[in-house]
Amino acid sequence: MNGSFRVGTLFGIPFYINVSWFLVLGLVTLSYGGGLSAQFPELGTFLPWILGLVSALLLFASVLAHELGHSFVAKSQGIDVKSITLFLFGGLASLGRESETPAESFWVAIAGPLVSLMLFGLFSGIVATTSLSGPLAAILTLLASINLILALFNLIPGLPLDGGNILKAAVWKVTGNPYKGVVFASRVGQAIGWLAIASGLLPLFFNGGLGFWNVLIGWFLLQNAGSSAQSAQIQQKLSNLTAADAVTEDSPVVPDTLSLREFANEYVIGRRNWRKYLVTDEAGQLVGSIAVGDLRQVPTSDWPKVSVAELTQPISQNIIESDRPLLEVVTLLESQKITELPVVGQNGTVLGLLEKSSIIRLLQQQETQTKAA
Image 1: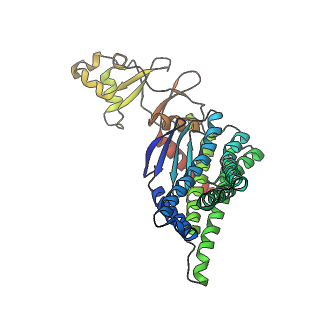
Image 2: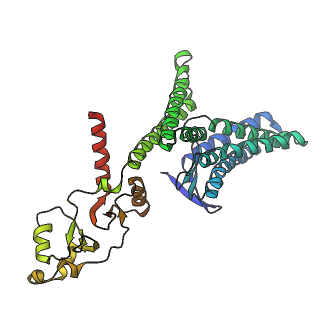
Image 3: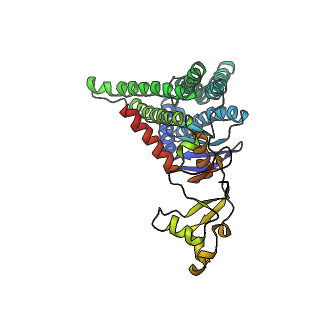
């Protein structure tokens, strides 16, 4: 998340704070401190604000516990938790991948609200069963209420909230399609976002006021739910395609029997500015690659006598089979931070090169065809 910086590691999970968190920390401290000052005037001038800051930090500790609930269940499923970030609207656990089944997805989603409900029960129980009174009892009662609100708010059935992920898992279970679950839960999240914005704007027409937080939360839901739906639709399209569908036309593939002069004349001069070419043997099997820049190692007068095979280097990157789902290929490209991969058929013959740009073009072509139909 932009504007975030790392503050440490929790249970092996990188922990970040977004700059927007400090704004909320200040507002919550002022709000809680002012409330404690009015409720307990005997605290004096400074102590209410110190207790307000402590209350705010405990609130965010509750949010962090909520996200750790998601994270621990995800880790138990073998999912890598990339980070936890505290920001304006609470917290976010970034997972390396989705759960493999609807049931696993459900348990990851419900874990956070369950932690918040447990904290609500814990703080409420302490207040109810002990003789605590004064500011400490007020702070614990406040924390109990906040955790209950945190649990119930997150159970609203629309992405990106936990309730949206629960709804996604339910639709996934019914339809057998995880992407349909994401799209449906995202649409519900967008609808709730519009309702929140409307509820925030309505006071303008009656008393000239504005439900600022409602509008802000609605905007947040709209933005994130829309992104989730768009991402799911793209993933669904990719899941129905294979690597072979996205192989670049006129890929840079040359036989190893060519001389360097033939290679330069027929494939390099006046052609697309490829920096590397895949090299195949007589059977069409991939043997390596040749870099155009390596031609400088050989005097031009010797090019007719030197073959491409002599400058061919082993392939250091992954080689993917043509029937591999395109969604997996995109994940591989992103995880390894590369822009292209060689593609081979089931018999090992080279089909060509797959580039990120060719995937984008393929999706654009499909979108155009869908609109035309």
